[in-house]
Image (cartoon, rainbow, N blue to C red; front, side, top):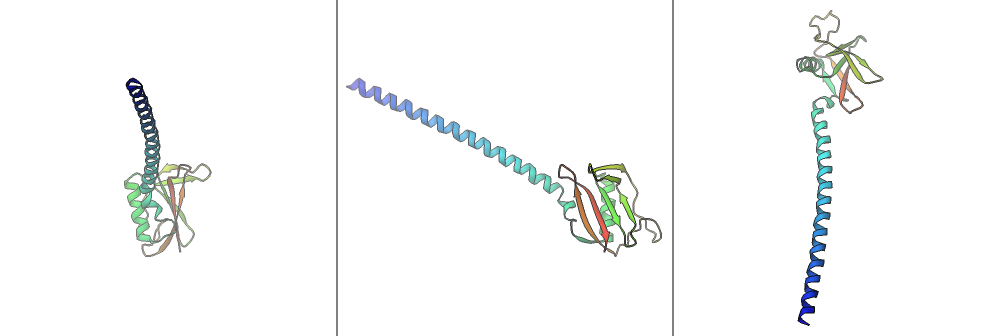
Length: 151
């Protein structure tokens, strides 16, 4: 009887060990899935944060001075971005990148030209004028164009 009791205790110990090991493996798999999900969410948040400085212009009214500053900073930083300005007289001028392929949402023709300071020059942006911003994203969700239209 003593040997039978020992055999039952050993069998119970083995069963409990198998159950604990199974639960540990299950928790490990769930933890790995949660970590993977958290990492994907972190990457999404970081990509949104990187475009935060540009996405704020969507639907925002800004001064011409702010538009000029953004153009200057984008050229200096060599950003992959087109800034299109439509002035009150209907003139359209593109900066940083000269053209934008609407169908493929790709930029073409890098430009280093800054807005003119002379009121009579082509592409003059009045510093006190108010512009409405609008953004365009490419297929990867990256902002590639900001359009400012004078109001």
